[in-house]
Length: 356
Image 1 (cartoon, rainbow, N blue to C red):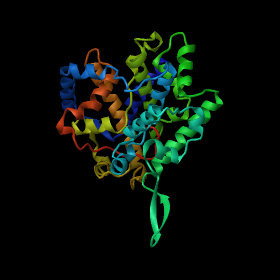
Image 2: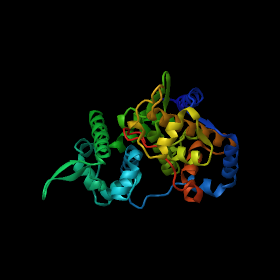
Image 3: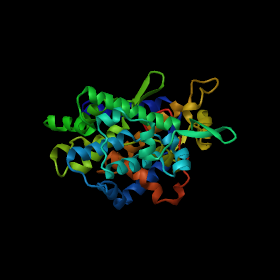
Image 4: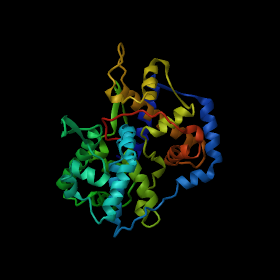
């Protein structure tokens, strides 16, 4: 991937949104959002600075490895309601909680650990159990897959596959893999780092064809990691001061589309009213069959909502002078913490994915 490819991701999203009839953008709420964003300079500044983790790393590779693992495991939003019910943390918090605990306990997640990672490790690290007990006779219990089995299985699969790829490349961990690109490139770019990352299945599976012949790439986890490393290291190491950082959007999952929908900026079209209903009812969209009499399905709707959010983020950055897309995305993601009207967001749920 080179610089035009990051721009190409936006072009794909724009084509998809214009081609599909799933969503429309309301201009008046969008203008109100632009005005609000322009006025909140303090909020934008706070989203643009790096907040150090409350832990100490022995070296750069160890810290980069930690950030890469956080990004790799940033998925599972479709299980958030179940995770909150069973472990009182959402998927992002589970990953962060688990990785922090591992690090503070002096444990390392390297290539060998990733290759041998199993369900019991997920339970030990994150406190998430994929099994549940069922009484098969009075006082006799057997274990069977529980409601979080799919989430646990996907964590194990992503770590095993990524570990196997790293082993094949003779890399000791994700930190070494990332730094190989940084150290061996005269002038590293954000696009080049994303291109390097998506050669690993766990970072490169965020591509969809929700409408026939119209593909879109998000590569959200890879983009988010590029933003994190840019913010964390650019003042210490000029190689992380990516010249094309302005093209990064960051992570687009189900949160920002929900914020934009609640604000009235995104509206789901009338022919997809069933999608809006199922989102409101909390139904996992990837279990939704093709709508009778159409070629529509819930998974496609989710991808198009993510694409619409990406296009709106780009619009916000262009209308607010000096604002980068990833800054706009982070500001939007943080907005519900400051706006009581944005509570009880209705987020689309997709469980069969390791992209978000």
